[in-house]
Length: 459
Image 1: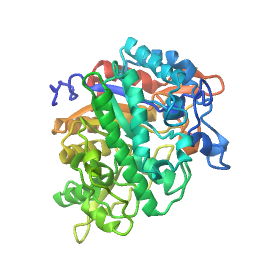
Image 2: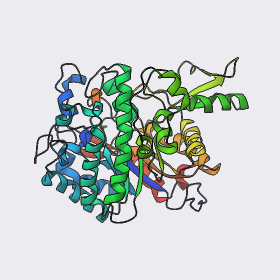
Image 3: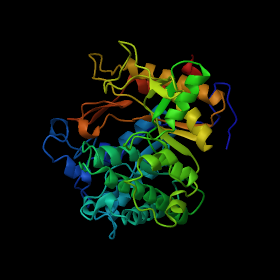
């Protein structure tokens, strides 16, 4: 799958894209037969979301998708990572198909293809059907079959035109923040044993979804999923720090969902990591005969969302120690540390371990953007952030990591989950009261970068 390297450092045909998610941009929360999701429910909980905001309207992408696709074409995107809304397609989560909801994605895919933008579809980006939550949600082992049924419906409708599929987005987040920490939908704070049951059912759902995609696709498909990478990187160039960072990236050493191997080793190796099995020994879920074979369905790529990394060094016993950032280290509006190294070490470590071509399925930052007096939106920090990270990604490619694409998060400013509309991640500014879109300076910069296949990056 290795592609011819271009002089600019990015492979020929490198996939330059941007991403978004159904609940965060679509709106039309109760239109055309759509059923409620756990996020529709969660937004009604007192104090659950910043300023009581909801995704009811969001960017109104459901009604303005043609305008948004035209913007993607103007930016020159080669690919757009979207998600389909499970309760828009199946209002009860299973059973009767909502043809009006499915028709929206049919129109959207056609518009993207007409604009020369490849659709890459994520089947689950957190808007779980509320009706199925009432039946136990991810705690119910049947959730894997529910998800497979939904997968089949979508792929049968769109698979004649869509070749690239992701099953689940950031399972660490919707399992951990949603079911253990209670700060995301559905807002539960379960015992860790129940959380691990959720995790196992989610992994089963991934495997059964891969099977369903393969069965329903009329031709060749590329299938993977998009966990969020927990990247540890060496604080210095010493071999000891490098080994400490590698080991820390692949370790399970706390009762948390925020790990790599618990979510990825089962998919790529067909087994849970030994250190996690030891640590969680008294809380492990039921694993039935054949489960691991289902989870380990062959996938084509290793997709990862990468936003930041943590510098570490080798301690006295060789184990990783976190190295604090110096005072004044740059942070985003989300107060995430700016660590461009993550887009070098992340792809390098993930390619080294799993030996699949890497796709950066999300990377981006929140900034405090507004429309300036000149009518434009100036976001120099986003341009600088993208440039620094892409220079590191280019270095990873130059040193042997096979990386097939980069999706910037996100195409539009949007509903940022429990933070409401506080954060702006978009290449395109959205004035929510009017729905007006304005290309930010970063969108113009990205257009030039895409047109040159990275040659304008410099560095």
